[in-house]
Every structure is written in C-alpha cells, then in structure tokens.
Image (cartoon, rainbow, N blue to C red; front, side, top):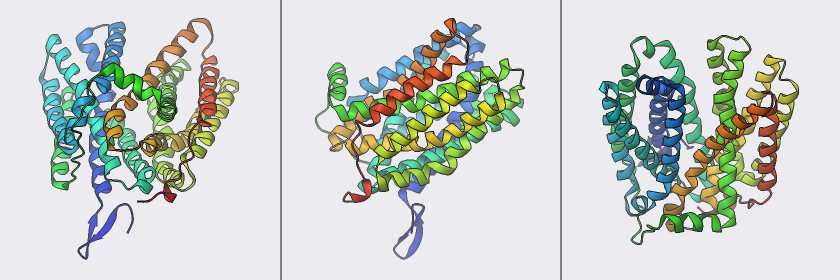
Length: 401
C-alpha cells in the first residue's frame, strides 16, 4: 500500500520505515534547535569568536576519529539497543547543558555528546538499511531525508520566533523533550535490528586502510563528501555575503528556508527514480548541474537576487545527490559484515566535506575577492562529476528483494 502504510492481519498499519522516519524527524528537529544556538552557547563559555571556531573544529575532528574508533562497538552491538541508548543519554545530556554554568563540565558534556552523535548516526543509518529491501534502499533513503529536511527548515524558525524569547536553556530543554519523545516512540515502534558480528575489527588504522583499498567504497566516500562540501557555501559563506551586502539578518532565514524547499519536495521522488534508473546517472546529472550553477553564480555575483535564486536552484541538484549517495554506499556493500565495519568510516565523509568546505574558501579569500569562491566550488564539483564516471551503474529495481 506504499511506503507509509501496509496491511497487517487485515488492518492498516504504518510501515517500519514510516515509523522510523518520524522518529528521525523528531531527532533532527532537536538537532536543528541546538544547532541554531550552538555558536552563541559556545561563546557564552569561551568569550572569544576565535576560540569558538577552534573548539568547533576540535569537535569535528573528534567526530571524524570516533567513526573509526567506534567500529568494534557498532559491530558487536544490537543496533536497536545502541540507537535507543544514545537517545536516552542524549536527552539527559541536553538537560545538563541547560542547567550547567561550569566551563570544565561543559567541555566534558560536549565531548560525550560528540561521541553519542557518532553512535547515533551510525546505528541510525544501519537500521534504515536493514529494514529496507535491496530494491528499496534509495527510495527509503529519500523518504528519510525528506523528513530530516523538514525538521531543518522549521527548527531555526521555531527557535527564532518562540524559544529565544525564553532563553537558550529552554532551547536545550525543548530538545531534550523531543529526544526523549523519540526514545519512547522508538521503543514502542518495535523496530528491531539484531545485526551483530562475533568477530570484531579493533585495529583503527587497518579499518581506515581497508576502507580505501576498495575503489567502489572510495568513490562513494568522495561523492558523499561533495554534498556537505556544498552546504558549507550555503549555510556559512552565503549568510556572511548577505550581511555584507546590507541585507537584514531576517533575509538569511528566508534564503535558507527557500534553499531547503526543493529538497523536501524532490528528494523522495528523485531517490525513487534513482532506484529505477541507477544512482550513477543521478551523480553525473547532479554534479554537472551544480558546476553550471557555480559558474553562473560567479558571473552574477553583483546581482544578489539573481545570485541567491541560482543557489536556491542549486538545491535541485543536491536533491539528486543527498539521499542517493548514501544509498549507493549500501548498494556496493557486499554483506552485513562490511556494513557493520565500514558504515562508520563512510560517515567521516560528512566531516571531511565540512572541514574542506570551510578551510579551502577561507584560504582563497585571503588572496582573492568573494566571487572567486564560486569558481573554487565549481572546480571541485567538476572533479566529483568526473569521479562519478567511476561509480557502478547499480539499478536497485532489478535486484532481488
């Protein structure tokens, strides 16, 4: 009866992926609330913008390393219990964030939160894969990403319009409530994933080398990193550019809202189409489209409304890439053993894209005007377009369930 509903013993019931997508929506909404005020919250302890940037970078590096160091835990653990535990501890953590005023305790909490994020992201992705059939991975990934993007659209609006009037502590308490509600729903959903391995791989360096020894995994890694690389331009550099051009801060929220709308509308149908025609075609079309957008943005940088319109249009290309890149990784994985061992390391592509997307343009801006950022992004996106030719043409609809 579709991705949302199915018949069960003659009655209509929500599918497992529909239940899990709503749980992910609640968790993503919580993350969106926190992310909106995180820099301000950090600054309340560190009292220095440079230190805020450095500490954020430290946490990003910690996340990167965690995905590799946590491989043994992921391999030997029941994924459902791992995900549920991370939610419960995270809810408690957010309450502590809300009442804490001590710098040292804040550092401890933020490090624990970072480790929990790595556990939650890894176990969540594996659960989505394991409750999907082989021929529905792309479709289910697109469905989940659509719910995720809705949360990231409305999260900042909720904070700006409602919660900030009460203070940042209420943002953390609201996030704790959402996470705890997600925990309760997850336990009630009876989503089970007992995918565990008896033999674990505890050698971090070997896991790293083994991951990149396989060409297919390497290609999927950099294709995935390209997605977060682009979002740095949209969420970090474009808000600064908007302010520098004399526009109001409220316009940033409007721009980010409009940039997310194509993702909400298109990610599910496009990911479904990718399952029918193959992800490789969507990588090629998506990245080539983003290259064209980047080049046009360079020439229209002095006409800000046209420029912003082009970047919003760029989200159509991202809708082709965001859900299909992760689905493609699962398509090339041979078995549960590889899934448990390599999905965590694959997720470091998120941090690699973010770190490179922040550092490379920052260095360029030391020597060249802002408009050359678009050529920089266009150049690297073109390299990813060329890399996409190396991807395998896997058509999920032709695969056995």
